[in-house]
Length: 260
Image (cartoon, rainbow, N blue to C red; front, side, top):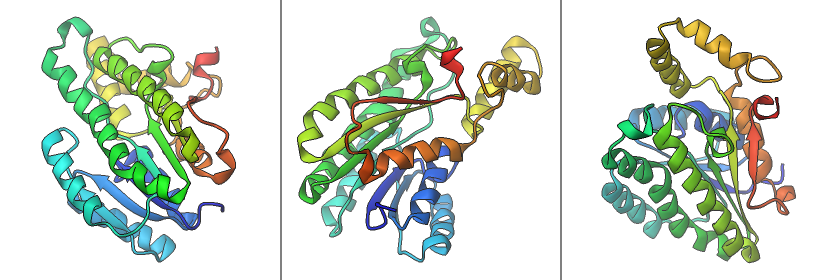
């Protein structure tokens, strides 16, 4: 419970891995600042977190795909913010499936906005709070494609790789301030994003969605799809004070997929 007094900013926090992470942080006594695009879902999630921890949590509603608007809204919030920030969880859904040669430059621009530029902007806004506190944890939720590319996810493979190298560079620059920067690489995890990928692959291969899920489940050591809470547990560990000697790392949470 070494993070019970911390404040955490969690992106993509109304569903999937982001929401599971927000719930675990709230259970450990953290105050949350949620960032997502759907304000109704944000309000509902805040209500859930308040019941868990009886803490006054906050939120920012903004679109990760609209960089100009994202920067203005987050600038306004943190310029007027009087508290502290100790933890930043960068998390957003990946770009659509597709081969690289079928992708346009605008596809790459949108993906860089969503996955890299918004994360970099938040880091620049939030690291002064962390430096002032002499404590910080920055965790980026990426993908196992960073280690081994996933066929059919050309844009995602490319941009996730860029995010990973960006994070490793930040780890070098911020280490002396007691700020760690790590990447969590989830394997196949039961989220709405995975449902979308399964449906797309089902149409492409002309087989059932259930068969797609079975193929994925049988492609790892534990023979099942992961749950958001299992990824969130790894993220929480990296938030703890006890993890302060771990930085610049890719932490793979995939049921052993890359090891077989």
